[in-house]
Image (cartoon, rainbow, N blue to C red; front, side, top):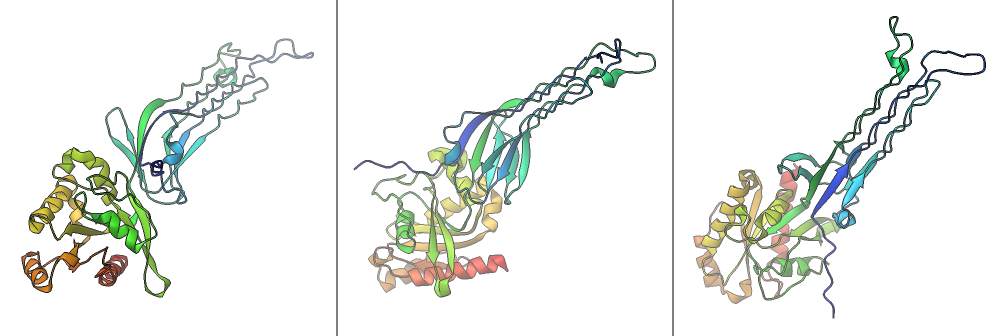
Length: 335
């Protein structure tokens, strides 16, 4: 059985170029009744823009995975009889909501698209050149020159996607995040007994009471030093930024549950302190390995400020309480 590659793409680099402006015309009016007419050269058309547009129907950058170059159309040259050249065709690049566009030259964030149909002109087209009619004056009756159009702009840009979900699953590799997602949603993430099985986020819809639902995101595992880029940390951490609620997941057989929790909190703080302002919850996974006495012992050691649930995805225990707590937090966020 072949391993199918994920259709989720959250990062692409593309070289973009806007169109050149058309040249102005230096035409002098000549016809069968006018032997020596004045200047009637038209202006050149504007070059096409490269425009990035948010589209709520896009969920991934897959459609741009193999795109290496994007170019808009050149403006047409001006003509006789004061006719202006046609504008170059604008190119629209549709991206999912939550896409961040950066210049690869300095890694500077240029903009982030968060609303449907929101547009940003990435590269403006070159301005069309003026025809000789523009330069006519009382002291210069017959200018025999025109202006060339401006060249378009170009550059290489990176497109990074931050997934949007109601709740994001945060934890070390092999914390049981993918297993939970596969149990409470119809998603089929890859599950295996080794670290970094999940390399891209997986999304699933959790059905709740009264035909309601919320979106859950399985974020790839985080390790100590992730804020510095270790273990592809930067690629993984950015997906947490657009989740309303963070569900920290630590297995009950962890060497030290408290230490793991603090490492995760610290990595988020060092990456972006604002992440800690989000609603948080802690799930102790594999709780079918614990008896009631051990659960109480663990609970007494945990931070009192963060709600905690004990769950087992395999035994399917504690999942209803988990969904109830998540639903309360999501609706608190919306109020």
